[in-house]
Image 1 (tube, one colour):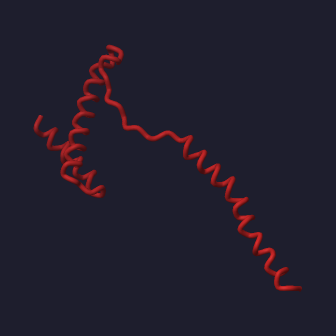
Image 2: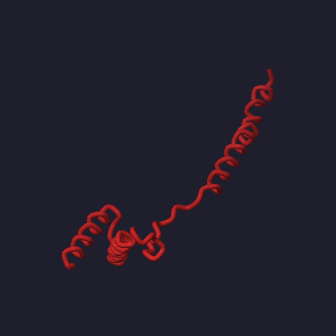
Image 3: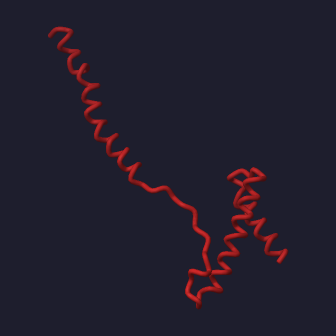
Length: 99
């Protein structure tokens, strides 16, 4: 056998890899484009809730506003992600104590 015949399968390897990777890359790109981004929970609007659930909706909205305010404080204070939960819990407790 000549040296060229021994190297011939190696020369075809990049082509085979490209042929195998093209469908994989296409499928991965399609999946990424098909997914929707996660959205934050919207504020509850008590006026759009049935009258019997309006009181609970008002309480939920007040709680959501407190949580958002504490999250904003955490962002302004540049709290590290590992400490964020403890900071938010402490903030919510102090807000509850004030009321």
